[in-house]
Image 1 (tube, rainbow, N blue to C red):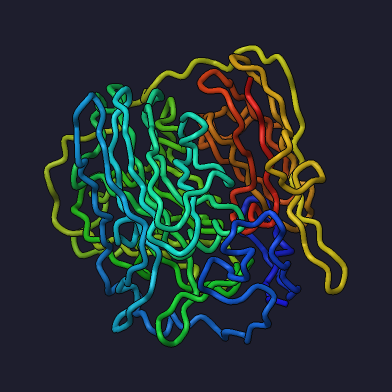
Image 2 (cartoon, rainbow, N blue to C red):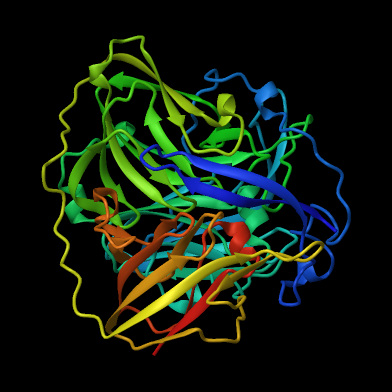
Length: 507
């Protein structure tokens, strides 16, 4: 059987922001019967290894020995240009294909890409103006493109079984009838999403509106999207993929480069952080403990900024922050650190370095009020959702469960009345495994965490929320945009690939 490393121990140290993880080795599951055709035919993501075959231990991650920290400049992902702006919509042509990236010095790494870009490209959109994306799949596997955090018709949501086959083209329509938000898109083909995203199928979708555009926030070259993730490499510079390999991935990538340096002027910058990892949680701080002003989360700007020294992100979560580098002397290097294990602290404990240059004109500032959000309205129903990884006995398969059941695309787990609001209490039933929760179609409000009011970082609109072992969150969501079947799941992608996914039907 395929060897997989299971994250079976995690606890958030009180007040310390440290995730303690212990690991063990368990046999992997063989491909479930509902897997897409490529996996069912005996290929895990089409190119890694035959399902069920024994794999040699890949050994330690060689990325840290091949990449010297803070020597490579942070790349910025390419911004796509529309191929047409006719008919009141912006149309883009995107092709999914294999390519090679220069991730490690002197090595070529095979990656899966949108338009050959690693990291994936950026689409800039505006509320009220539709975007049409013609996606062509030149990979060997089926895929499904999900615009994470968007309100879109069900046929453009990129559901786990709504597959785009090899060689096929599909048009995805995004009405953008929602406020500004820093969204992202990624593969969602069930059982394949974990490896596809790990190998590069992810990009950013930055949606703006008049409310955001009117604010004097840093913009242009001073607005930096930074996608964070981890990886494991062999001695040739190839990505090594294994399910549940949280401990083995010791190379931290920012915009697809290991431990890059970022040249900044001595002024304010807006930084849009995305955790695009499969499993890794980040707890981010400036090494000197300097202030970070958080202005936004998954669903756009907070109502008010808040100053902190730590930004916590689980897989799929986003945070918009402003850092004022004018407090540093030119020539100063400021490391962005991570205090969230697993992995060797000398590697996973550092993310990137800001190298501060000369001052630059800075007309920007962060207003005391960023936007106004209506209070959550009355709810017609309350639900409880329980997330759990169920460990088998010796030689048995671990399963990802929601409310005690694995994902079944033919089953409706929650019937929701269109136009109504509901309160969902989501609970992590594991005492030693972290999860998070992503709800398709809607942005929700966090009403409570473990019975207490949420912190200011969770006071805005959210679509993904972390759940440390034993934690519960209480969410308010309104389902008034589209009808149809949409999934909800743990966004630790290995967990959703193991079946920790369910679906609601809005009628």
